[in-house]
Structures are given as structure tokens and as C-alpha cells.
Image (cartoon, rainbow, N blue to C red):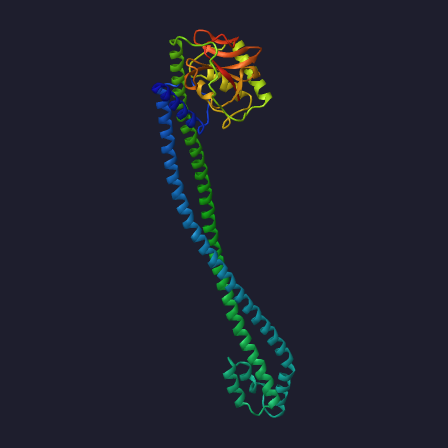
Length: 401
């Protein structure tokens, strides 16, 4: 009884572990050396992933720094453009005033002519108005005009307006043009700095993307290596358990041809369709007719054990992970829906036990119909098409996948 409980516990543990791990093509009963090699491969991938993660973190930090510089350059560029716009507007306004002054100059030409004529008639000369024409600013202009009060008030106002407008407009335009040149130079420099910052950020983003791609690839490879290692460990454990049960069965007497029904229950639903079951039977038949060898723990494509043939047959029929697991013979009894032997259809599974209990199931086959089955029998007999009663210890139910 104690041994029976231990076997049940082991079967349940392995069953639960398998339900969370994808199955992959395995070598026959993986060796300890193969498992150790898988562990080393996993460790190497883990180290590579850690190194790549450090490089990626450093690259991301550099990218953040360059992004901050690029953003600062962008802000300076925007400010310089605003200042350039102001300087350009000032230059345009000064140019407009200069145009207005030029029009004023044209309008006062006639007045100046009259001034010259009046000066001559009054006994003066054109040199009397020369100081007005050469004044350097509004104040000097007014000083000169006060010295020439012999000119009419009309002439005085006209000349003052002319010289003041001309001097102010010329000074304003010069100042605006100088400001515009300074701003154009500054804007060009800031634009160049912005381009350098943007280019650096763009190149760093490409480097970050490249490193991220490497990191993602290594993460996938690490996950794959981990699955390989776990699967090899589980397959070895399951193959050893099935082998132990089969060896025990070979040395156990008193096994019935068909065990009595003790009311064991499996799944309440099925996962396969009729088409899947038909395809699974066809696959098993093909492997038997190809005279493939029997090897413990193998699930094809070149060799099979009993549960490996079942798994490979349904996997080929489209029932893959996560709906189907690489189990051993006893665990399949709990992963299928139980049907009575008189309700069997091709594709159902048959179980063989040396005590009539789930935990002592040591062999599994695929029902072919008409009382026959496809099986991976043993190392000595290989893969067979045989009668379902040819092996003692048939459980009183089949398992519908």
C-alpha cells in the first residue's frame, strides 16, 4: 500500500509538471550527460542575456542624455527663430519708414528750390541752407535752423521734416539690419547644433533598437534552453518510471486478462475530433509498417516507446501543446475520458496494469478497431499490430483523447 501511494504521488507530480512545460522532440530516455549539457547551455544563454541587458541599459542612459541635449537645442532653435522674426519685422518696419522718408524727400524738393530762390532774391546764396542739408541729427538740425530764421516759417518746417525723417529712418534701418544679420547668424548656428543633437539622438536610437533586438532574441533563446532542460529532465523521469513499472509487471504473477471495474474516473470531456482520432490511427499504422524500433523514452521520428507512439500520433493529428502532453502510460489514464471496452472507437487508448490500479499501469496502445491495436511493445518485439487481449492486465476502460 505504501509503495502504491508513492507511485501515485510520483505520477501526479510529473503530470502537473508536464502541464506547464511544452514538449519537444526528445532523444530516447535522455541521459544525465544530456541534461547536464542542457543546463550548461541554459547558463550560457543566461549569462549572454545578462551582458546584453547591461549594454542595453547603458545605451538607454546615453539615449536619455542625448535626448535631453536635443530637446535643449530644439528650445534654443525655437527661441532664435522667434528673435529672428522680431528682428526681421523691425528691419521691415525701418525699411518702410525709409521709403516714407524718401517720399517726403521727393515732396520737399520743390520747397528746397524755393528756399534757394528766396535766399538769392533776398541777397543771400544757396550756402545759407547748406548747414541744414548737412546736419547730422535732429538736435543739430534745429540749432542750424534757429540761425537761419530769415527763412520763412514754411521753408523751416519743410526742411526740418525732411532732415529729421531721413536721419531717423537711416539710423533705424541700420540698427534693424545689423540685428537681423546677428539673428540670422545665431539662428544658423543653433540650427547646426540642433542637427548635430538630432543626428546623435537618431544614431543612438538605432543602437538602442539594435541592442533591444539582441536582448529579445537572447531572451527567447534562454526560454527555449530552459524548456529543453526541463523537458529532458521530465522525459527522463517519466521514462524511468514507466520502465520501472514495466519491469515490475514482468515479474508480477497473477495478472488478470481484464481487470474488474473499480470505478476509476478520467476527464469529463474529450479534446480530439473523429478526424484527429482517424489521423492518429493512420500515423501509428505507418510507424508499425515501417518497422520502426522500440526505444525507452523515445517519441520519434525514428523510434518510439509505448507512450511516445501515442503522443507522436496525436501530435501529428494536430493536438499539440498546450492541449496534449508527453506523459507516461499511467498518467494518460487521468488525461483521457474513460469509456467502456464495448464503446471503443479507433483512436481510443488502451491501458495495461499489473495490479488493476491506475498507478500500476505500465503499457498503453492505440485501438485500431475490431479488437486490434497499434502498439510499441518492447525492445525485443518492436512496434506491432496485435490483439488487444494479447497482453494481460487490460484495464476495464479505454481512454478517449
